[in-house]
Picture 1 (cartoon, rainbow, N blue to C red):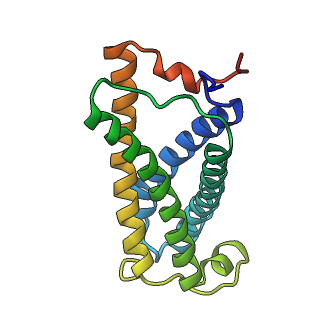
Picture 2 (cartoon, helix red, strand yellow):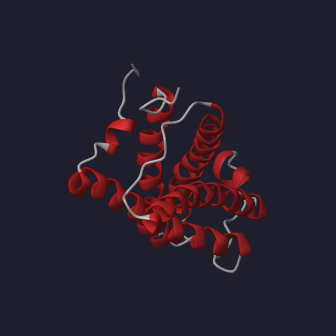
Length: 179
């Protein structure tokens, strides 16, 4: 039998990842990008939080994906339009791909530049003059922009269902026990 709501753990992880992803995106776009690497203490402080949050997001997204593949899920939502339904599915899987791509490219960038030792172990090594020329940094930026657009589309779809169709779609992801 298909449930009418997602498992409570899925709901908690959904809202937790939503908040963490938004925070990490805004932190990266509006804070980290504005602190020059020459401002070592400030940059390291910001990187420490951003890197830790990125690792947590990656782990949450892997757990969410595993739960999505193993737990009973509600029937796919229908919007009344085949193309909107396909877009919704593409957006959902795109968010997983972009979030995991962000985590992977962030880890690759950190390892390529020795950031774990600089940021967490206090190695005293200098930060690179810039991260911009690094391939993982460029990928990180592409995934960030894609994730930002996908989150906006996801939010627009949720609001469409809630306010226009009034089909109570968001109730499927509410917190609390399932019946």
